[in-house]
Length: 397
Image 1 (cartoon, rainbow, N blue to C red):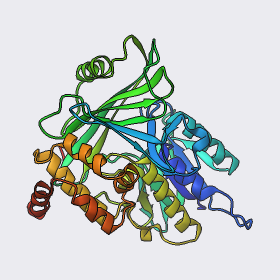
Image 2 (cartoon, helix red, strand yellow; image 1 turned 90 degrees about the horizontal axis):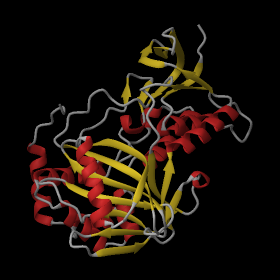
Image 3 (tube, rainbow, N blue to C red; image 1 turned 180 degrees about the vertical axis):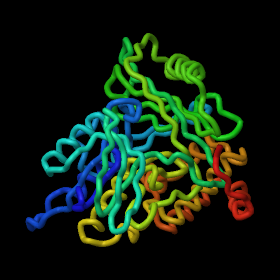
């Protein structure tokens, strides 16, 4: 039986769309690109709501025409109210809404002749010399796709065994105020003028769109998410008592929870089924940022597939050194040894913002990492480092 495609990509979010576009784009020399089938869930609960992705990038990027806003200055507020305002040089902090990105990527896939199948995936498995995806369509009729490779971006049913697992959970409001209160020239990356949990940290986050409109978020790094009432109370307090917005209208809400874990995500199932996106370890454990890592992962995987190489040889998107540093920080935050608000405030106070962003992205050199490490609480971090090998990894409940 002939195959339906050379490559099947499961999921039409950031990871699936980015990889499908990167694989299917035509070769300059006119050679045939791999045939790609993209699987998108039918309308319903499996499709995520509209959401916001943020990332930093130097110079002009491939998605600049889709951005909602960008900033070349970042601000951080210490718990005592001290403001740290830092320029980013040629780097910009960028905001992208998922609906604009998805529409643009689906248009590109249509131009490349990529088939989009609407089906609920039940399994993706190796079978002899091919990979087979089984599922059903919106009418519950069985559907099967046979291909040489499968890249699966569906969230894992269980998180990997880990020594530390926190959750970055948040709720954001798109607000419009009655008077001009926002500075559209700078984003507030972390605002610690908020009550802090006993372990982990909490902060506000403000992305101004203009003088009257902004995305205002309340975020925690802790062991469990909050209920709806707690998020509402925290955001009302932040908007009214901390930011002093006055009268405002909430035009849209978004909410999310991102696992922050030192567990190792499996990168494949069998010889022909690979995991991508957050399911493939693209989320940076210490920050929750994912979009920029997805772009690197997609680029490297697409280069391998288009060159006929095995994707198994593509390195992890976050290297061992970055993962080791993340494990230490997560342990230090979870035990309460390190005050999260003081940690990030001091880091942005003494290290250039552009270097901090590269550090958070895992793009700094070992020498730069060492220098940044000296500016962290050395003894609590060393204690966390020493005890990590003694800790048992367990699967989060």
